Length: 468
Image 1: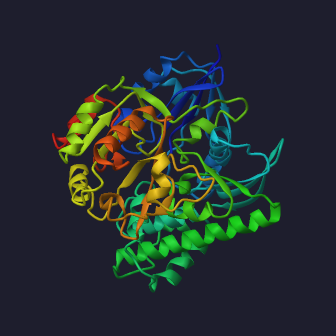
Image 2: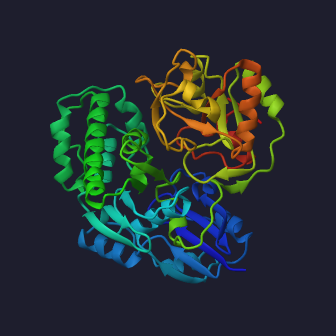
Image 3: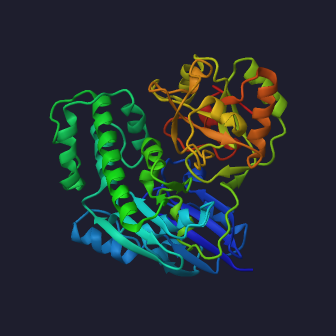
C-alpha cells in the first residue's frame, strides 16, 4: 500500500492531500482544523487526521522552496524562510520530500480532476505569485506539457486584484471575492485609467498611494473587475489562436473569479478545478499520472445526516438551517455538506442569512438547483459544468427566487444531481413540497471564520442558527 501526501503550506491556506495507491482518500485545508481563516500553517489536528490513512512514504511539496527563497532574497522581502524538512519533522513527519513548482502544482490539480480528455488543451495559471511566475500559459499536448508564456513578479494580474482589494479596505489574499461582489454595484468611472497603470507597477508597494482621496469603493471595484477581465480574455484569446486549441484548463487563485470565468467559458470548453487556489495545489503537487479523484467531498467525516425531514420542515417555516453531512468539501465552496440552506422565494432571506453570518448586506447568495430544471431558471452555456459554483449566469426568473439573484440579475449557480446524493435528496423533497427546485445555499460559517468542520465548531454561531 503506497501512501503519499501532497502538502501546501507557509504562504497561505495550508492543506494536506492523502492518496493510497494513487486514489485520493483525504484532502482538507488546515484552516478547517485550526479555525484560523486562510491559515498558512499545518497543525497537529490535520496531521492526525491524515495519519489515520497511514504514514506517508513520500511527501510532495507544492512549490520549489529554493527558487522561492531566491525571489524573496532578490526583492529583499521580510518574510521568514523555513527549512521544510525541519518544519514537517516538528509534526513527526520525516518522509522523503519532493519539490515541484508552484504553477505546475496549480495546473496539475486541474489536469487530474478534468472530466474530459485534456490532450491538446491550453493551460492557464493566474495567481499572485509562485516562485517567480505570476501568470503562465501551457501547451498541453498528447504526451507533454510545455510552458509557452509567463509573467514574473512583481508584474502580476493577481497582485493587481489584491492591491485594489487592499485599496478599498478589504483584506488582500483573502477578501478578493468581496471585491468581485462589490463590482456589480459600480459603474464605469475615472478610476479605470488610474488602476490600469498598476499593471506595470511594482505591486509589492500596494496602490493606496495612487488614489489619495477616498472614492466610491463600488466604482473602484467595478474598474478593477473590468481591467482584470479584459487582460485575462485578451491573453487567452491570443494563445488559443496561436495553438488552434478549443479546450482550456484554468487554475490558480484568480480562477475563483466567477465573473471572469463566465467570459472564459465563451471561448472554448473549460475546466476549472473547484479548489484552484493554493489549498488545492497540494493535490497537483503529487502529479497527474494515474491519480483518481472521484468528488470534492474529501475532508473530515462528520457522519451521515439522517434528518432530511426535519430540514425540510424548518425550511417550510421560513427558517434558514445549517446542515452538516459526511465528508467536508475540499475547497472554498459549500456544496451541501457544510451549508446554510434557505427558501430563495423569500426576499427577506438575504438579510436574514447575512445577519446570521455577520456579513455586509450587499453580499449575494448562490442558488443550488436540481440539474434537470437549471435551464428553466437560468441562461446556461453548453458544455459547462455548473456543479461547483464557479460561473455567473443570468437568471430567467428573478421574481421566483429573489433571495439568490444579485443586483445585476446574475447568480453563481450550483446544479445538483445524483452525484451529490445528500443535497439532491433535500432538493427533491423541497420541490415536492413547494414546486420550487431551488434553495439558497451558502457556506456554513460566520464572517472571518472558515467553513465549519465538525459539530464542535457550532458555538461560533452563538445560537443564531438551527443546525442539523
